Image 1 (cartoon, rainbow, N blue to C red):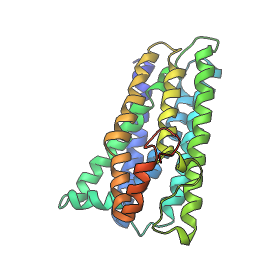
Image 2 (image 1 turned 120 degrees about the vertical axis):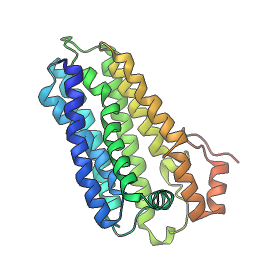
Image 3 (image 1 turned 90 degrees about the vertical axis):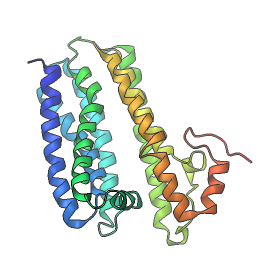
Length: 262
């Protein structure tokens, strides 16, 4: 069987098993928010499996697994600290889902957790393609993709750090974070997350079938703009911050960091 099929299947089995364990834990503690932590860490598992099993050019495989693992660990550790600090209090968006999915909440969350595992494998498609490329040299596209990937990881990390520091101050409770990158975008973390997947696409274009990687920024963009990203985040912000957030919406770019409106 082709490695283009076996690697994704092995990865799906691994992260699907992880999500079953995490669903059992989430059911017991009544906090589905832990799925976010392990969705992020699952990319580390996939990167490790790729590093062990893919038979492409070693240098290329090392770069994609390093960058994928670095991003996964940074995001996973950040979410572990954020969600783990209040395991007894489920985030608003998951409370809302819990209400909407009653009375079959646990089963629907099981399906949701498994869909998260499937999304891990789906989004790792470029990783598989890149790591299986046998070409014995790196192209300019791969260098460009790796550079943008690293910049985007740093930008996402900086925006998360700025938000964390803002929330740590009790005086900011109920206020809108406008520190650093958050002064220029309402969602700089989502912007840099999207740029990560754009950079993965650029990197993958140098490999056979690399064009397939376009599904990743398209999918992430759809989720950010239409489903669980900006819409749900802003609905919760409007519920908790009211008029202050409406003013923030009026003056601040929703996505791309840009100058304030008067």
